[in-house]
Image 1: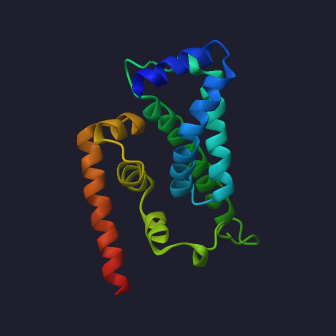
Image 2: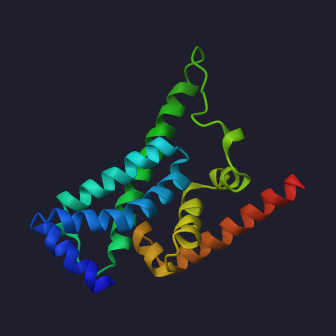
Length: 174
């Protein structure tokens, strides 16, 4: 599959829309699921996934099949977009919190979420990302480390802490 995808990306570099469509069909759903779990917003996740696919079309020459699988490269792009959005939200929340006339409003109603989604959103961003990439996207720790620009050891540590935090949340709800 990886060799096949490298050939498809090479065709995309040449402007082949069929190859691009094939790659979008293969990867868009997984990127959207990842983004939704990280930003907790369906519409925003769809936008992020679409942006990632645009990057695939516009910057396919940046992809090197000798360095990473395409799914890893696409998740890295999605990860960076998600982090940018999370940081922007944090800046907006910090600004709103200093303005006493404008209370901070949650962007997503947590009553609409599954319990695991609520628990994931309570994790620090780095733990949530490592957990989602590993368990929901089925990526190896090495791939997760590459996406997060981290070491495998750091990813393993994040996963241990994330599982511990989820367990604590579960215990407090019982």
